[in-house]
Length: 190
Image 1 (cartoon, one colour):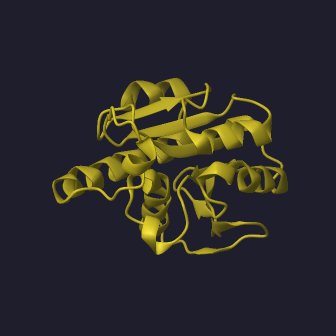
Image 2: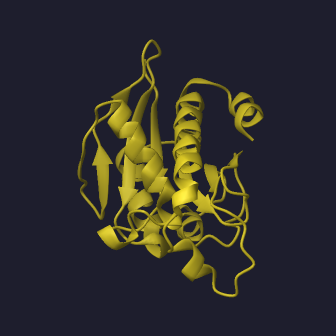
């Protein structure tokens, strides 16, 4: 019997946000969908949901989700899909940006606080727990007084190649998350 995993990429909807640092979660699930020839469609709530990705030769299934509620309300969409599929917390992986990590660094955790990330804060609030896996992608450390300006800025031209590499590594980490023990995946990517 196959096991289903819900993979949520965090970001903000709209063309003006598409290439911003805050949208790397969307970028990862978009890359996964493209690599597995899956399409996104409107969900039964404020989110886009993919066709089910079936991993071969394993029997795992991935469902990709992009909340359309804007970052601060991501938890509403996640809760809706989580309940619809009647999942366990171990079947959820949330992908987000992290301005406190150096650019290009990945950090997978099995649980934890929101770390100042409003999307994770919303998900924690709506699920009522911090006990779900999250994959954070380093978008560059900043000591800016206004972090919102930084995370809503697009990546620079010099960051494009390392960004593509980070998205590729994050996509591989998602596949490993579905197929392997979490400790193995953390050791491999952290």
